[in-house]
Image 1 (tube, rainbow, N blue to C red):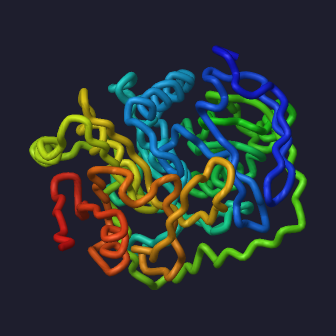
Image 2: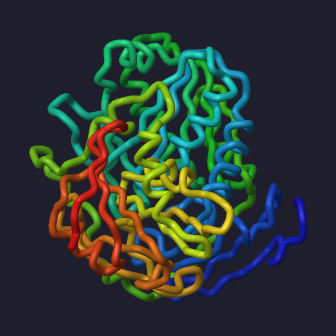
Length: 396
């Protein structure tokens, strides 16, 4: 491993929900700079490898996130095109989009498409459904691209890059791969190569080899850290409320403009908007740009535009994942769901008053849940209707 490791190659962690045994075999970074340990309120999986570089459950600088995007993009081998990138909701969405943009900068002439999975319907077209079995919200959906040219890229993909924050069994990747195969019916599918990109790979050598066999397509794997784990559940029962109540006919305010229906280029925010917010920041101030649920990457792009000497900026996102206040989770806030499913939402490792400025980025129309969150954090709300159309919502 590069650099000193603050915890050894083998470690045993006693969580409130059970015992986690972890083995690190290789890492590009000191392991504790990448992850911590947390206890999940989930009867299916009572532990969490809590990423410190993802911008989901832990505040992260945009420079650190960009470094991870670049490292994972550099680990993608030369692939035949068209190349389709798909990142996993909700945790891996921002990671996948940032990695796609980093890869595209290095391959500007190669046809490629980005999509992310979702737990919401956008439009009335049929959904491609698959399962994330260990999740607290197991139903996942993939939309067909709306643009005819993007649909052609999707149906004609020769290489598929699947992105998530971590791999532990690989089963969800396999389920998504099989869902993607539905778009290429026939005796001889066109898909020639599968690449998996994760921050942490805990499948172990045997698990990765088994997954490659089950995928039945040439497969490569890129990760910042490799290892294996074993978890022995305890007797503590989960008291968490359900994290998914999918209604196929409900309109949740989820946008088609930011990755669910396909993107072929980077997200670019209006320079005047970004500069206007930066002008409000003073030297020595701390700033948090907060994404909401599946709407993550816009917050990263915005916070990157605020980064300059003398101002401490970080990015993070709210989540529907119930995690106990223990270990790598020092603070936990809960509030209503701005997508209107009636599911508790959470923000971890952020406390009211910690930041001088909080900017909340949301794709849903303004509603009571967003006003509640803004009041809790003394934040400003920004409704992203498209890349070019962003409206600040008065909160006072």
